[in-house]
Figure 1 (cartoon, rainbow, N blue to C red):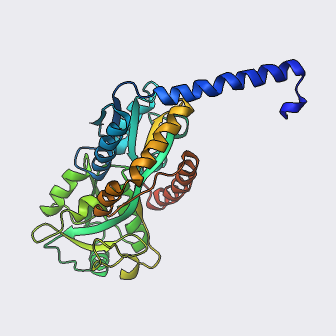
Figure 2 (figure 1 turned 90 degrees about the vertical axis):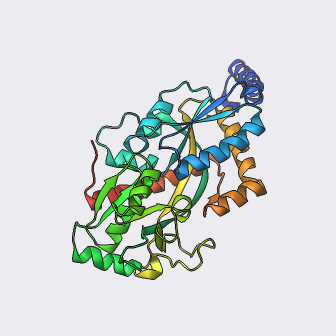
Figure 3 (figure 1 turned 120 degrees about the horizontal axis):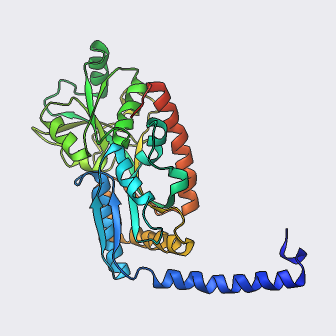
Length: 328
């Protein structure tokens, strides 16, 4: 019903309410934040989600004039930290820096402690980029084809580490196995960093890890990169082929990190967080820092972020079903 179809009295009341609401929204946006903001990372310290959160949080602290305090609340593939935020006051002072696991877990866990769509408000995709297929430096697998051949020769014997059940590192490994048609065993950890420790120690055979964390560990006696999961080779590792050009045509698996707030957070505050995060990501220094990690800043609108999550959710639903995955 259009505004012109209302009675004169109702029309006057509606216009009056809009006139009151607009200044209130502007006031809420201008006055927030008036105290420190908590940013929850649902994984252990040291992983890429944590690094991105601390980098962006520090720059938002400067912009807002109030500290952004990063807290690590790992467990259940990101569900523990996400649940904490979902059940926090929706005043904008508790935020979540999540990874792609937020679109994975609803398909994987039979009993979710919260409803992603109903209990969390997407704000913006902060950063995105390819992942990296890595093995211990002393692994007999020198190429992606070598690794696939090894796995096919020993069904179920090759294992891969992850940041936990439901993490995007977990599903990236499953996605690779699904595309390669191999049976490999998942070994979950409470965060990405401890998984790399065991990978370098030879207790784990392979990982499809977040680019920043995995690439930082390349070198003699540590890790070897077999393939990049993006469409093109990474400028950071130009000599490392893509997985697609290494025997799995069309394969692509990007990781991402995004900001969320509890559902019901005032739209003006959500808009301010999105706009200020976009400002931070547009800063040349921030871009350079992200580039050094092999990922790129995004800072898209709340609507675009929510739409992209729907696409991701549908994709992971298919992988979970194909691999017969389940949790709890």
